Image (cartoon, rainbow, N blue to C red; front, side, top):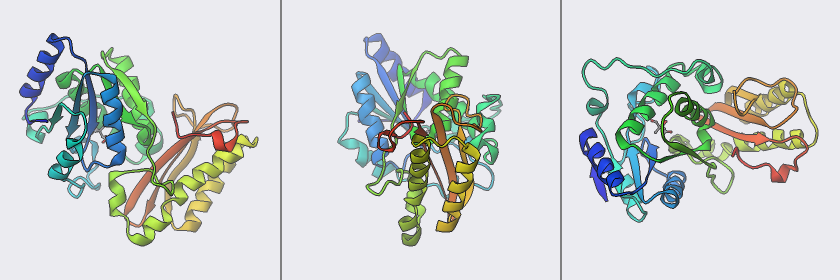
Amino acid sequence: MNVVGTLPQMRDLSRRWHLAGETIALVPTMGALHAGHLALVAAASRECTRVVVSIFVNPTQFGPTEDFSRYPRDLDGDLRALSGLKVDAVFVPSAEGMYGPGFQTSVELAHLPRHLCGLTRTNHFGGVALVVAKLFNVVRPDVAVFGLKDYQQVRVIEQMVADLDQDVRILRHPTLREPDGLAMSSRNRYLSPADRATAPTLYATLQAIAGAVAGGATDAIRLAADGRARLEAAGFVPEYLALCSPETLDEVVTIEGPVLVAVAARLGATRLIDNLVAVPGGSPAAVSPAS
Ligand code: PAF
């Protein structure tokens, strides 16, 4: 497995692979890899002849009070986790390499970031769009794989790719969950044992809403309020729980079709997010994570 530390080296490798007729799948990550990431890598290897995993804790997507400095970093552990998989290169650029002196370009979307996580993380999606655009420019992937736990991120990237005519196919990958339903996340390691025991209530609350929607409930505002109350009773501090359009992320008032049910809530010092798509008239058992 090739560990590639600079942008010119990565660009050169990509150019050589393309000239040889190979195809490239990229899995962008911030490291601290868990089974959810490894599933993205496995999916990538089914799509293309070459797989690149990028590991870069991107400073531009963290706010000044967020966890950039304490975000888990474990390159050795990450390389060990990837070693058994089909990975042709691990791209680990430095912050200086990605954002050199005088860097001044931004990538902003007008609407999608103004919902859900973007309401409190105001610079987050601009930072994500910027770094992903740069990764696409350097790696030149044919396919890029993203997990649906970060549903809003996936929509932002899909929209950016469409708007900027970027020549890459975005593959959505279902959220991987622990046996008790908690969505896998690098931040789960922050949870205390007591909070870890409470954490599955987040997904259980989304499933209860999906069940109500499947059973004919149409009042999205009421369902969201009930869901927030359930989370508060369990000890969460909800940031948002919203039912919205899976495409535009605009809030839905009356449910008439599939709705994204998305949540962000704090448990202790840890911020957790999750989502699913609820389908009116669908059986609750058939409601799957957003896909
Ligand atoms: O989802 C993540 O890990 C990050 O937001 C990403 C897409 C790698 C960009 O830094």
